[in-house]
Image (tube, rainbow, N blue to C red; front, side):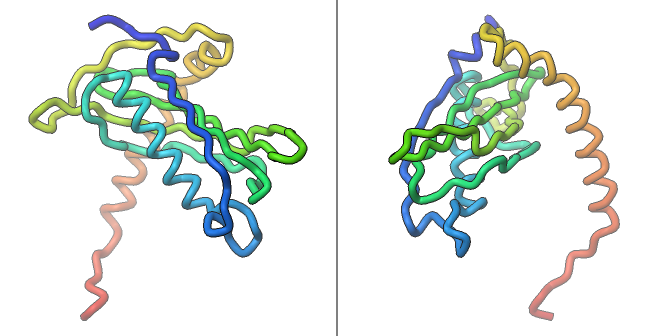
Length: 170
């Protein structure tokens, strides 16, 4: 299976912020942004693997600057790292004030997806070749994030063993 470049999985989408997209602070709903992030990242994961992919984790979504109705928002995603059956996708969110033209990084996110074969089982994915300085930096720091994901997942499993499942109707 040949390796692919980060650019092979790149997806770019811009949209405008409308009044129904904002909260009582007149900034973009975090949940709306997170939904859009997952959607665009899933396209990058599938484009890279050319297989159905499922979200394994949203490793982080860092809100760096508010997005307002005066802004357009541009989502840029691409695969930064691969395991045997998983891919890490980076999403950069850029807000642009449509009146002034000022642009800023409004948020960043890392998500992990698992590729599936026709039977719904994890499937091998191609490797990744970073080319730009940004891609190389993200790739270089990916192994540490992968290790942190493993520890976090194990901690979540241990915590889940102590949680109760209540039936709210009882």
